[in-house]
Image 1 (cartoon, rainbow, N blue to C red):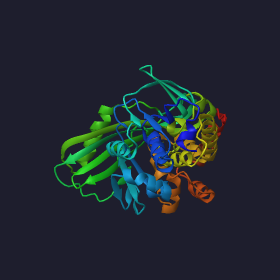
Image 2: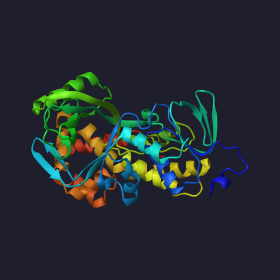
Image 3: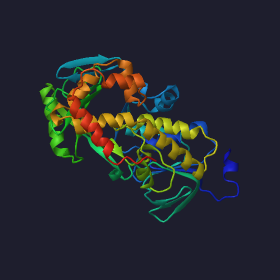
Image 4: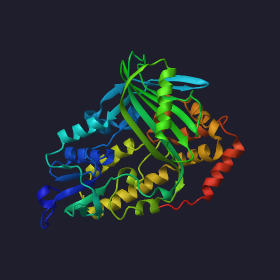
Length: 399
């Protein structure tokens, strides 16, 4: 349906209003621009820039060829493989790894989207499937509204948390790393499963992130920043400057009420974390954000009512499909002592690279699922069974 037809008989300010200029909203806008250039888009972001203050990373296997084509102009760093380090196991995998910086995300979208599409510094006070009211009092009429403004009511979900503080460091001498270290779990295990994540951005530039799989969401950023700097010193690196800081707290979901979570943000079409579209184990949303963007751009009927029905059904189906990952989270949080959680990942990283790749993409085969839980378990069998039973007794109302 072309632009003229979409707006026929209506005083529309745009065809599609996308609320939130983060990863999900930005990729939807980019996919629609590529696939439906006839549509008038509005990306409405409360902050001063798109993308906030983030570094998003992903494995090559997380997206298909169409997804990679969508992301390719935004990628700032590429590596041919990555390492993991555990107390009893170290490994290099040759799966390609990529990173997108939020400043490049902002610049790329501004370059590729039509002039006037992006509105920053515009906070939303209310929204329906076809109308948006801004804090300024301005109203925007649209054929459809898609809400991508971050998480809904997390009280509807149960589990633990992945929390992190990352520093990008300029060093006085080269660090010597050629590829990322996705997990260095040889560090002291504090507050759950702890690991350090390393991205080498240049010979003297490295991003160091201290990450925790914890029972609670509390984040002492100053304390963890001290640990990051201490880690750098332990590696023999001398820090010349801290050039970038990042922190976050992501839900690691064991169970919950999906319908309640969706309804907590109103009867508006949703995508991204707001739609519950993130990996239950890693908390990362990029693979699902890419798939949602391509899914939306591939539909002819982009009315608000039609979009709401499709996106709700799709998100609910994905919630059901990812129940296995939530079971694994239950074993980690309810079955393993906090000091031994690292053993679960240590064992996982002994499995085949293809299985690991499908796991991160959220596309595990049934054979993968059997393989992950077969053999000698990293936690006592009885405790694991009790953890799964405990999880099944918790509220699990589906959509």
